[in-house]
Image 1 (cartoon, rainbow, N blue to C red):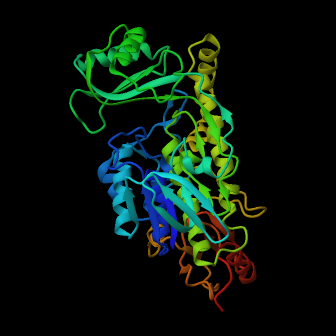
Image 2 (spheres, one colour; image 1 turned 90 degrees about the horizontal axis):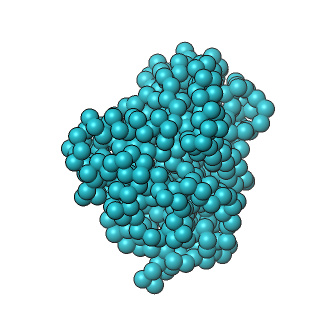
Image 3 (cartoon, rainbow, N blue to C red; image 1 turned 30 degrees about the vertical axis):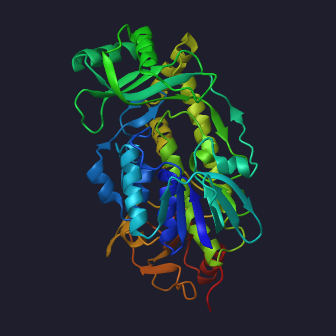
Length: 478
């Protein structure tokens, strides 16, 4: 009996495998591809994801493989300076191609003892009160206590458990690919700048890995393909480039070609019994703002410790259901902001006027900060009820007398940061660390942090603390 089967070895599935292994969960990742992808649809980590990597001791690996960027309020093609006072110790993003993110997360998952089985496409599953049975294309049957579908927008897992995926179909499509170009770089840059004055779904960006002459090309497609399985061709790219810019830049030798639409859909439920959904299996939306990969990784960060507690038999009532309660609204808000961005990026006079108006509004510091916190997920706060203003928020990395807060959370455990020295986690010390220390940035007596860094309690009363420990970490051992 496997503890958890994760279907899909992309960033979401690999992040989840890492989180589960921190708690000793026997996890098997089933990935239908026989080798790691070389495609990088996602090209970076936003601030919140950078925080998560730091909190798990992975940030140095990502810093070595990417470059920092500070594009504040990147919304609907509107660029503004990074706002002051963003609530994070990491006010930047990282230009890390998806293929690199997958490599780094896979390496970490293997280090922690996860099993990754490639060439294993899940074609069927069933569940009962004791577990889940997954069937792969070669006829193999695997049994697990839980199963998580991280298998993309066309998720087999989601379909097999009968979860509806309501939303809107694509109205527009965009071609995307990496290829070589013979045109002079200065000419390409000038043409792109001119075309993007009216068409924001157009671009040619030099390869992020520094391969000379290679560009990431984005150009509007000629309508919406009736058959999404139809292959995108280089001739189609050339035709659309000439239509939009009057030149095809001499593109040739494509690394990969693809297309994406502006469809927005969200699973009605993220959990059915012992089967859960995360990442694109739970929600799809246009890639505007670069939020998709980040949203999936953050789903996994929320789910991992809760699922581990369920496997261990110590999950308090409602803990696993809180995954849907907390993450479904976050996904819905991302769908809404990408809908808005697609409208802003239109070429009709109304869209242009609306974009100019929002650009003016974003010159106000508070508006710019609000939009930036929305795109980077820094503004996410879970509803834990009435209480202190920190309740439900993530605490940024703060400096303690003994070092940094995030350095103390690499193991994925809960943490009581106690400036009073008079509190206790007796009975929960196998799940929660007690750190007697203080941070100048936090003007509170004590905070209880969940393994995902969100504040579960603020105060100094031991009975109140014990009640919150019971709520989030289950019964005391004595």
